[in-house]
Length: 194
Image: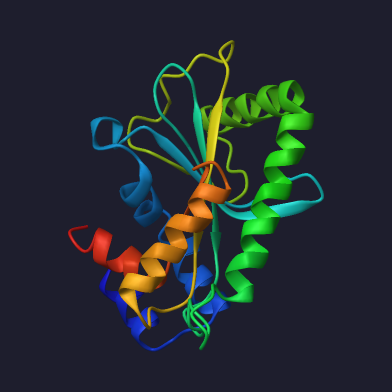
């Protein structure tokens, strides 16, 4: 986590942060997998959805599989503009995530079957999309059950913590709480105990 903190403090770009996270996928699992099942996950990078790719994806949970889509931007821009509006980079990421969710909703059954097939391939030892399988080496999920999914967008640095928090909350409301928003500073603050 110290290396990630240094990247954020040095206002590193998206490529540098993504390169670090691709080599340390366990950090995303520690940040977003419930502590009760902390060893039951698969983390991927550059995971394909529709015609594009999601930066990072986590498969986790029990019974019904949860899929967490994570879009990562750099720490080289302010989360808020000079007029205290959310940066265009974050808003574009929000729109991209909503597009991916729309695709999943339109193709739900095909997507559900596909992600379970990918999960089983990784559990059987195949390396796909830079996958990292948690210590349990499998997930306690049922491929016949529905899946649940949510998104996370991380990017930018904090200039005004109170206004930024309000703006992040507003974006989460706009996405019906399916997407969580973080600046790199808020991500680090929440995960410093890692």
